[in-house]
Length: 451
Image (cartoon, rainbow, N blue to C red; front, side, top):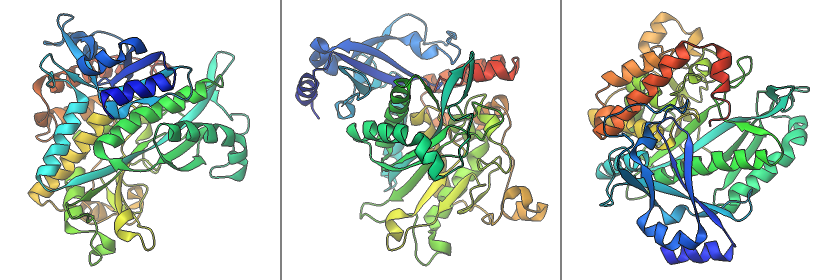
């Protein structure tokens, strides 16, 4: 869409307010809305934002970062192709933005621009990426001042008809709102936890996948809020329940339209390029989790034998592995062959998360790394000899440990602009320090509705 088309669409929908939205490094969706009368000019010139806004952490504390003082402005410059009317609010629309300086360049700390740079790196290697985030979330209600799962009195069985009857109306309403904005739902299920749901959406290009993740979270929260309920994408909003992931499915394609992960002559269809990509991910995983499972709450989810993985293991249809090679569909083998990255949750900034994951995989392709043997069983049940053959290592168990690995990584931070790298480390270190000194109630209270 061009500027004229966006303005015409906003007028036709009788929109009054347009959210100019971005995601900060803590994974929080933030926005500066404008009135429709100024939409045409703001689509071109952007909306002013203080440089200090990106120095706000999850706890709403402003962290001192050189280059991000409350002096000077950047611009939220929207991508017109992301314009959608919001179905759950009256006369409101949104558009996703890059953060640019006055010369229309990345000011140095734009997560969306970071992902664009990684996509360009993949393109230079002859690779196009398709991806999708697969989210789980809890529907939550407040009872006597305490947050509890929506079906806490019943805890409907996972994947059950009973659960579909209980949750079905909410699932259908959310799916309709997603589809109205151009996101294509594929599956909608009641998940393992009480009040936990999952709606899977169809893949698209890498930038579109991260944009869709932003719109997905907004839509689910907005629709659920209209029912007096809360949708929580926190990794572990209830310590005694199963965690929620935002698994990343991806595939790699060449300019001839062939799936680079797929080789019918390879082991269970996996190509050599695919093996290199997986090896790059698993080798860099202890640092990568600081980007893809980055919050204090994330590490309550990353536990053994919990379908989330606490190791670097990979395997074929092994849901206890960090990287799962998904079995393809009959007579759609090449089209549907993909990798699922499971050590990912919705507390991550999707642009930083997906970009970092791709960087690690591309590193493996460039260096022709080998991943070791696939884990054929739950890693918790494998012998030490099998761990060695599969090159399995434990993942960090805290924010601080993961950030230590990230700081030492030669792959992720060096690929960022210096300002973005410093911002990420200082913001996340500030959060890690606070949460390490607090109890679980404090942690849950500050995560349950941030994402």
